[in-house]
Image 1 (cartoon, rainbow, N blue to C red):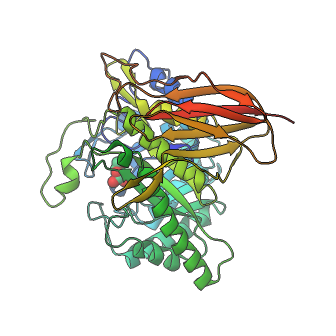
Image 2 (image 1 turned 90 degrees about the vertical axis):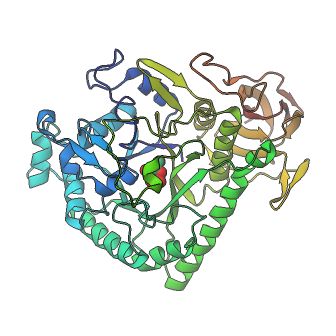
Image 3 (image 1 turned 120 degrees about the horizontal axis):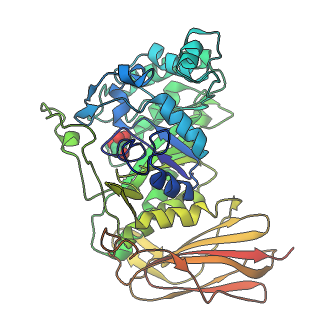
Length: 484
Ligand code: AHR
């Protein structure tokens, strides 16, 4: 649930995680300043190499001696790709960072054979042709990559190799079968609809599930929050829309599993999600025109996030926690520069507001997500029903209870009393709050710490329950100690 996404797009890889000429570069050419901030997010699975990029990518271009790797035109984002960072560099970085690698195969221009060759390159032992090739490239031990995405957003007309649901499902099944011949234990993720606002949602998803059959482990879901309102309360209620999307998919999954008589139902992989509304690359809507090829790593969709946006990120995470029985994978898109918690400029680094929000959750993730029963003030949103002022989730660890709460009210502070049925809250652990004087405040190069989490004071414990006051427009992360 606390995963990330590293795509060859814009300045995510180059000038993001990898920049050998930076004064921050380590012996692998990776930027230590970026990696230190990513380490604070304690990411779980990180998806690579795309995204739209993967649908035109030949993984062979990115392995072997660097001097011999070709420069290619990346048709997905209309720029040049140097291939100086590839599969080995990513998998070794993932290992150093403690990330679970989540690799995507090309089902746009790629074939089932190229997909299974990539799996073999990653997972086959020495003594096989591709295991030997990997060893010759410096890594005799198999990487044992267990999680594989079968293409990316194949329902979207912008996708290289976009096709019908029948054809996609055929490609995905065939690829998965070949990949599993090479590496039987892998888990596979098939493309669901890339956006719930598309007309084929959720019929595409239903057809992929039924057509693929019981061997599917996860269905991919993508969701980007676009801000279509100036009303802070409405914007901060975006998580409720994510809840609704998950509910719809829950029904589809249950229907198909029941109709097909499956014992096991695939789970959801939200393998791209974030706030994204200020920037849009022209290559996405100019799909039918010849695109101008930009140089290497041009800046693309480098959003600068506000406090409000960070609270929408918190709303996504609250929604995932509420649905943790079904949402088993989620990757914030992306990790640096491209709609990301971090921005680089030369050797400088800006830590965005959404970084704090993600970290506050990720540090409190160990335990079980609880069903929260909530009583308190609400507000009415035109055509979106009644919403609680506070959006609350809770994670129960062995001796700690973590409460994550967003106050959606732009003007009023909100008191919160926490009780845990059957247990006694005995003390206060680390508590933080993310807020600012203005909901649209953001961190900038001139003012890099304007929106930053601070210790939350005034948390009290009386008679086994806890009391907190949340400032207007804020995220509170409250850790409480439990009596034995
Ligand atoms: O994350 C940016 C892009 O958004 C991805 O490449 C694509 O999958 C989605 O449309």
